[in-house]
Amino acid sequence: MLGSLILQGDLLGTVAQLVRTDDFYEPQFAMLFSAMLALRSVGKPLDLQLLADYLRAFDSWKSETVTVCLDKVATAAHAIYYAEIVARLALARNLIRECTLLVTDAFDGDEPESLVRRMQSSAAALASTRQGATAPRLLGDIADELATSLESPSQVERTNRAAWGLWSVDERLGPLMAGEVAVVAARPGMGKTAWGFQMLRHSAEQERPALFVSLEMEGSELAGRDVARLADIDSRRIRRGEINEEDRRAIRNAQQTIGSLPLYVWAPAIATLAEIRSVLRNAIDKHGVTLACIDYLSLVEIESSQRKEMRHQQVAAISRGLKRLAKELKIPIVVLQQLNREADNAEPKLSNLRESGAVEQDADIVMFLHHGLVGKTPMPPNQRMLLVPKFRAGPMGNITVSWDGRRTRFSDPQAADCASYDKRFDEFNAAGEFQ
Image 1 (cartoon, rainbow, N blue to C red):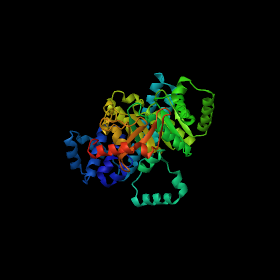
Image 2: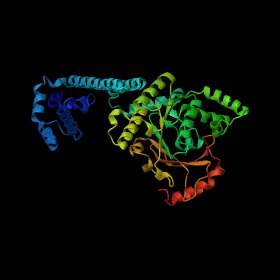
Image 3: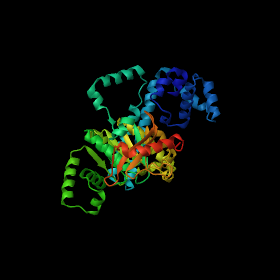
Image 4: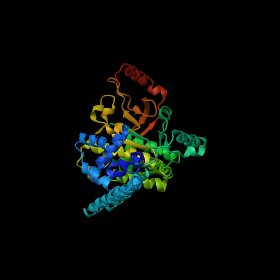
């Protein structure tokens, strides 16, 4: 294939859609192909002298490599055929590697259920790697598809989008769209789990199935919170068992209401990104899930191949994986995350996202739930400040929301409740206190 490209370089663009640099088994061939792509990117021809100069700059020039490539060329016209062979063999090697890892882990005593999920996820990932390489499309064609879909109300309704569940937030930010990742971060006790769960519950109430992946709480604890909210009972009384007959009736009514909702909870002790991917894909296929929430990012288990990496690299890999997952499955994903201690007594910044700056880079929107400390004056305990320091599709800013800690629920605030605080907050913001 490489020899054919040297003889007929105008086929490189087509070949590059079929083959990637890491598809080559021999490192010297991968380096040669990388050099070809580099020359093409700056508009230079695939000339032998230019290739030699480029590779010498990296101490990678080996004349015998080019000689071997040219000696094996029957005709330059077969470049595409050869490229398909390289891609097919690379896929076979990747399949062998993944299967070998699974067999090794099975003999080492890993949980069979976990290995099955990994196997499903790996198979889907390998298939999508080849299927995902699509040819460039005219912007006009894409725009035509968009316009056609918007002309059909039923098509608009089927589009995977998720409302936040509070009018004050939906009005400012609009819905979270398919393929987007929203990171909702806070210090412990600020209500980030309640925020994510309430958003998914709102989606389920609109007959849009949702999946909550809880790596921090048991499913029974989440159900208890929701029952307390619907029954209008202090959740602490339920935990202590201090309920009367009237409370029991209210709890049973709440349970029946919850039972009709397409809201699913998966609360494993540990889960890797591959396992989350497998469970989410199955939930989409079986239940039509249109929205997912991961609680929370730092608790996602790393793969065995990543255990020697630095922690920020591990978190970065998980963050990138979740963004790819949202695009691949074409659903919005809400990811909960903790802020570091520096955000305790000041307005949070993007640098306060725990363990890795990649979380900020990969997210389409970043939101902070905060007690809203202005100078030395905190917000009332029944309010939270929702700060939006990053939003690719719209405006950034701050939104005041009401918080009921006893029933773990958010609501739209009464204007009079937060007007005085918002005024002070705006004054500090204008003075640069929060920049």
